[in-house]
Length: 385
Image 1 (cartoon, one colour):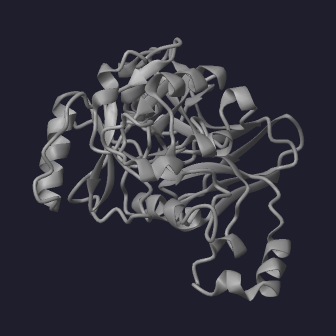
Image 2 (tube, rainbow, N blue to C red; image 1 turned 180 degrees about the vertical axis):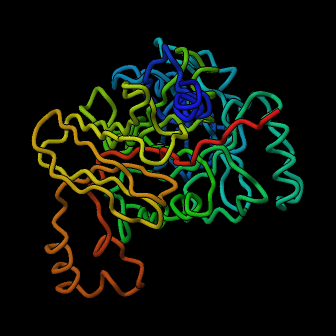
């Protein structure tokens, strides 16, 4: 009897157990204020000249107020190589959890989440950045690779194992030629390629909000990162990020952002979530909230489509089992974005494609929600004495 029960017992003991009494928290991990060199704060601004008045931006307190109005729980202020926001009286105001940090200019941009001081990146070589990363982690922070294709994140994961990757930077419909230069499909593929190599790294989203002029469409929470945290604190958010317990919505809760959940059934309960490792063959469930008429997909290794279903109502769910051989799965929700009409537009206006980078003509632009990955690995039998 004991021998028959052993395999089940081993799976339950070995698989990563999710937090038992946690909560999903929403926020933005990439927001700039007037402390950044590319955001003007008025005539008294000490690091942005008057001729850049068109970059007029938000104060720390104003961004926290926007976060509260939009229904978010946390906000990371990540000015360029600058941590003055941490000491600003508006930091952590309006009942929103403040996540200290800054955006480090390296060979690419690194998000120093949890940082209350700046760290020496030396010559920005892989060895120097890894040393900086390890110092940050020793202080309780985590390193995120921001918008990995623009500018390119030049560090291999084997050399600089970032904790998270900003797979969704800016609203997804911001595609070349305007109003931004991000190729979102390429950024998502960088994250997928890491998963295919065996990395376990959570996906996040960030608005990269800078200016008042773009506040309505690219303000805090556009997109929103959801983190499953053991407690509603800065520490809870950082630990949840490191564990990969994340999903992303195009809009914040206060603006009706769609949600997607990917869950695994353990011992009769849908308790496994993105970031967890479960046994192959474990039943999976995908749930979508607030996106009727959209399409939900569950994708596995090298982009294999494990599920493709129409979302038939405000609350939708579907179950599946990943085929043998898959090492991970994640979910995405995409709305109708008229690809045929966009291709016709580009054919009718050839100037749109002169530079060859007009991804607006071919990329999806209606991404509504995305999860990090659930991982699959066979249980390890206990060693015999």
